[in-house]
Amino acid sequence: MPILELDNVSKSYGALTVTDGVSFAIEQGDALGIIGPNGAGKSTLFNLIGGTQAVDSGTILFQGRDITATGAAVRCHAGIARSFQIPHPFVGMTVFENLLVADAFGTTERHVREDRCRDILDRTGLLPKANRPAGSLTLLERKRLELARALATDPKLLLLDEIAGGLTEGECRSLVGTIKGVRDSGVSIIWIEHIVHALTAVVERLVVIDYGRIVANGLPDSVMAEPVVKEIYLGIDVDDQAA
Image (cartoon, rainbow, N blue to C red; front, side, top):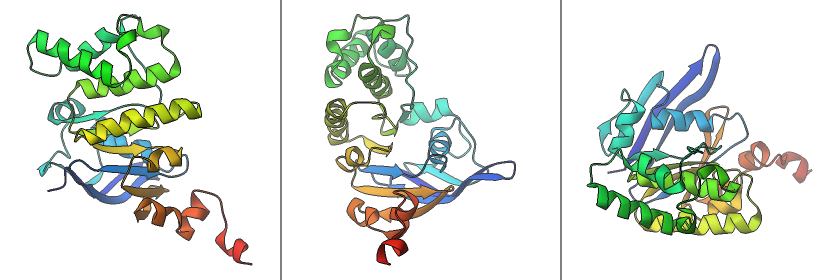
């Protein structure tokens, strides 16, 4: 059974259709990448999966259960977590306290919860910063905290929204290594990203979205070689190249 299935999911704002009949599935433990131009509807798709916006039509199944009409809190409890493009930590709280807030959605005893948070900080490279105010972190550290807070909710499915954006090449490589560790732990991942080489280092499958529609879906190398992807995403006119 796929961990997540979208069947003909659509969302419009007035006359503007942002997500247009999107259908795909992801298996437990897999990593799926989503790319496309700015304004293609990628972040709106995450809003629909995460439950912060409601679909106009279509169905969303999580672990075989219809969650189409459930809210974000219910989906978080069920095991769907998300990071956002722009990190917004609780800047007046420490890094460790930020994780405790996220982990409060769980049901473990406090000492177990604190041990889990320390483990997550260690896995994401933030343990030395545990007692620092979150507002003092660098961009890379804030990105890592965004990932750590999502992991603190104990997700089965992790939605990463352009988490590598704004990082240097070295910072990006370091973050990719951390995300690979999350994937290898058995957490399913859907990752929206413009830095394609970072994405393809982690995901097994790639989906391309343009004007709210899926225009390609398959193995990363095959998808990136498709003429429609070169033209829409990379700006390469295949017909001009052939001429």
